Length: 90
Image (cartoon, rainbow, N blue to C red):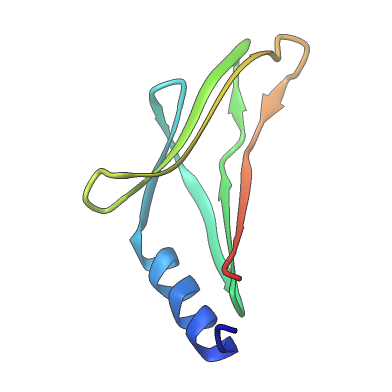
């Protein structure tokens, strides 16, 4: 079993490495990067005029992909979109 202290330390390390988010290959602003114990949450700003989502990626400070989601999602009915990612170190 991994200790709580080590899980929280690992979450803090992940939080410090998150650098930017790409939505369909375009950079979108991170408006909140929070940590609560061993949970890290990333929230992007609301984006307008997005009609289709193909990829959402989070990158570290060295340009490496931390996580990536690929989809084929029509969002033309939405006025604005924001994205929230939650990582829990277990």
